[in-house]
Length: 86
Image (cartoon, rainbow, N blue to C red; front, top):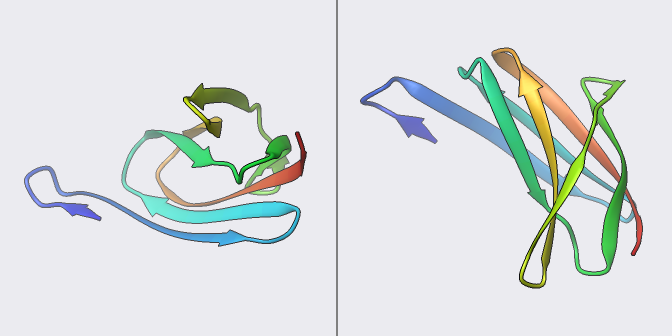
């Protein structure tokens, strides 16, 4: 997605496997909040950002569950969420 008025952009690639979700993304933002929708019946048990552990918090909106992480720094990042049954 590109925002011409501010020259902002974000590009992402989402992959879901049996026990993990990977989000690779690039952005021009100095700070970002990643909010990833979890599959029904799953919870995030661990988060990695660029290969290092990252603090996750959870959020529920009606029946949907999200894993949320704060990210610092412009450029390319990779977040992996390890999943387990709820």
